[in-house]
Amino acid sequence: MHNIKVIRNNTQAFKEALDKRFLNIDVDKILSLDENNRNYIQQREALEKEKKDISKSKDKTLFEKSKNISTEIEKISNLQTIVREQLETILSSIPNIPYSDVPIGKDENSNIEISKSGIIPNFTFKPKSH
Image (cartoon, rainbow, N blue to C red; front, side, top):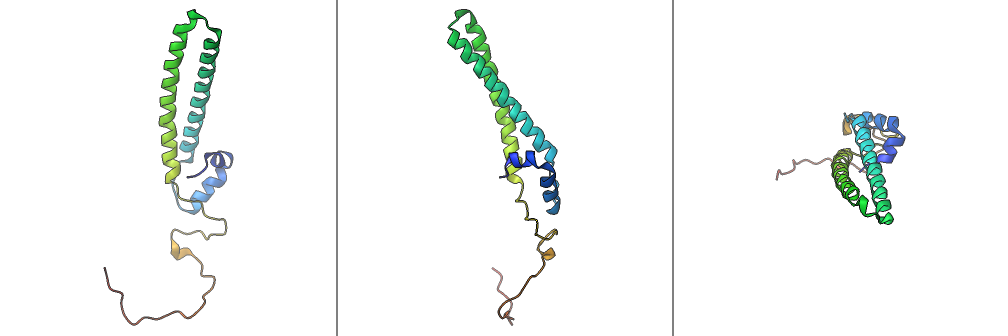
């Protein structure tokens, strides 16, 4: 699976590498899902900090607010899980990026033969089909 930080930090190179493989993948959607995921994490962490501060104060009047924060944390966690799963599904479906010295082509027929070695056998029979 691809590292989202690498995609985020070098988006143009990632898009160019996908173009070399003739893949049509919506990189902007990946970046949007990543941004949503990070926003949900920040929101959840801020609410968890607020809840922790309330519990440290031991103020009984803030008990209801603490319960509401717990509910909100659960909602945000569920949303973040959905977004993270979508992001991971997309990232895991993208094939590896080719090296820069790999020739551009749709399949193996675009490969360049660099050298041959040894004696190449010439068989007089056809292989059996299984």
